[in-house]
Amino acid sequence: MPLSIRNQLPGTVTAITPGEAMATVKVGLAGGHDLTAAITREAVEDLALAPGSEVRALVKSTEVSLATAPVTGLSIRNQLPGTVTGIATGNAMTTVRIKVPGGDLTSAITTDAATDLALSPGTSVVALIKSTEIALATP
Image (cartoon, rainbow, N blue to C red; front, side, top):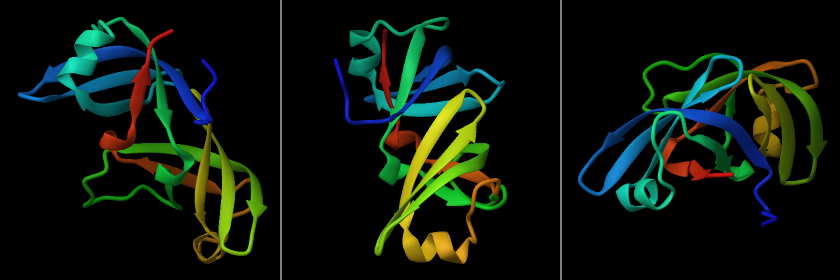
């Protein structure tokens, strides 16, 4: 099924922590980094997820924030280091392509933010993604 979500990182489920209605699912990416997705327990069951399951972590580009260094004192635990590989600048919004361990991401941020961060190809960045903004798909 084709999707409009371009950010699709393949990985393997390494742990599941069930809660009353939601569960957190830790996904190991190529390159040794982990992502945590917060999804419903029903989704975990429907997808038959278990440690070792192959998945794709899906995230909209508008949900990928950028920083120029790791951030502490923040509830966002998904922080993937990467390098800017391309930029498409518009009047209001800028699309930033980033190479991260395990794949490529696209971030849609305001042009003002891209300017303030002085982003250009080769700039080191950290992609920040809330766990509630990651969906999981199985092959």
